[in-house]
Image 1 (cartoon, rainbow, N blue to C red):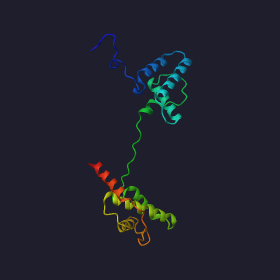
Image 2: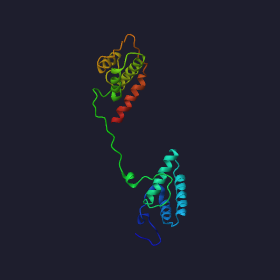
Image 3: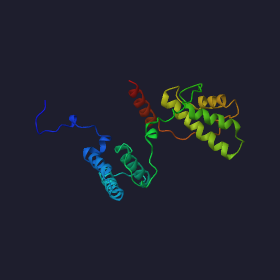
Image 4: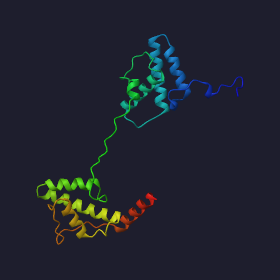
Length: 202
């Protein structure tokens, strides 16, 4: 239904970037049409200042200004002939998709320890005996016990941790349970985390 005198957005040309609204798009269109280059430059800088105030951001100021000038160029269909203070990202660059991130597909023997722990096991295999390795052994063993409690694989007893640590380091790391002391673990907190994980799966 058309009513004389009313101008509907659906009847207008689509705007390039909705976040700036039609008014900014109209300013950009007007700026492109200005014949004098110096006046066009002043107009473009005024538009950038308005865009910056419309969308304040904690983003790094240099990155923020790069984004604003890129948006201005995009809204003008890259027809705005001015002296840009930054190197404008081309339309082809904006349209290009990032390369897909390769997902690690190496399998791990047991999932409840997770990939990070298996990377630690590999590290421990190559470390020289000493204080640094002892510290990493202690951190790894304590994390293994938390994982066992969290995922409900056994009761997280010390012998299970010692056996698994020896197994996954090819027998290189042997915990002496007579002298090794695990960190005090808040079992109630671990149980609450496990409950929350089970609820998320439902």
